[in-house]
Amino acid sequence: MRTNDQPSSRWPLERALFALAGTVTLLSAALGGFVSKWFLLLTAFVGVSQWLYVTVGDCPASIVLRRACRLRSAIYPEAPTPSEEAPVGTVQERVTV
Image (cartoon, rainbow, N blue to C red; front, side, top):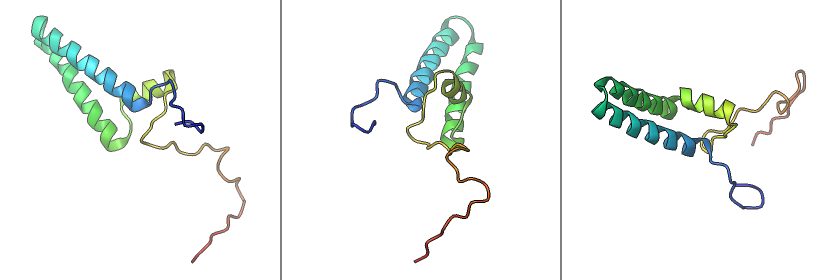
């Protein structure tokens, strides 16, 4: 959500991943049924990639979509960039209660 509470017109990374995974799974199942059983390996690859994304936070498709389409994750926050971090040698105060 943007600061003015209007939904963005771009899909979040997770929605694009689900659409891509569903499309590839249906396509590979159809090709596996009509062309060659070897296309079912593509379905297995999609399943492994989904588990990778769930457990690690990245999969091959998410890396490509993040870099090529500049999609952002709605679930996993991004690490701060070096410009957002405190400069080297700066003392940061810690408040203890």
